[in-house]
Image (cartoon, rainbow, N blue to C red; front, top):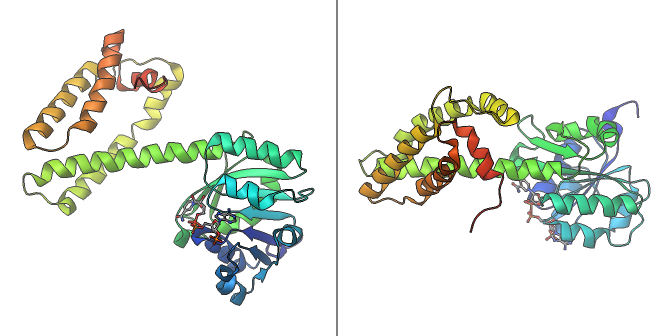
Length: 292
Ligand code: NAP
């Protein structure tokens, strides 16, 4: 195609996210075919120029590229059923785990499809802007062939050939998100006991989170080398400050479960002889199955 916006695209699944994806393709000028189990969810998109396919098979035939965005991988399998997938490239942006992604990739490829798995690290209102980060994994040539079209959705990134990678990055991002939020709530609960409200503490918490985030590249080097010299602080020093956080929380009458979890992991690493090393040595605890 000489003009990338002439490339036809199909979107299957028109929930909150699928509607945003189809709207972004329409806005970028792509002839856009849509299908949804509940057809009425296509009304606004049809008014904006989309074509509503009568069946999934018809939707797949509308062009070389089909995006899937439904509730889960089970729904993807049910939708595609025993349809002919020969010659189709599927980009599955449905959330799931890496095993589901790998199994669905193998299943689709056995049936003649090219398959990329994806993870959307954004909410529907930002789809179509650079703030919408969308991760992809699977065959590189297939990603590169469709990258100019996928760019209508936001900042598209390719992670590697293993189709499970997008899902793994997705859950790794969730670990980061909940850790930051829980740490902020712990501090907020403590400060509220002294009459400091959440809005007053939030800018300081934000500075702390950003400052700690700046440590990550250097700490990642230690993890990758498997060498943890205590350049800034030893783990046993950190463990003493964790004890302080637990004591302060208990004295203030706020929940101390989270700091106790931090300290239990640090104590195990210290018992294993790592007390004189730096914090990232805890990767050895995180890399093991949990004890409970
Ligand atoms: P949603 O609004 O609940 O929509 C779910 C969609 O899946 C609907 O189109 C629904 O069809 C369809 N569906 C479910 N089961 C089906 C089945 N058995 N057969 C056919 N269609 C089926 O969800 P959403 O927010 O659009 O999320 C879709 C995917 O995007 C999820 O995997 C979600 O984790 C991911 N995601 C969402 C967000 C977000 O902020 N919304 C962000 C990142 C990733 P009906 O309309 O007929 O029910």
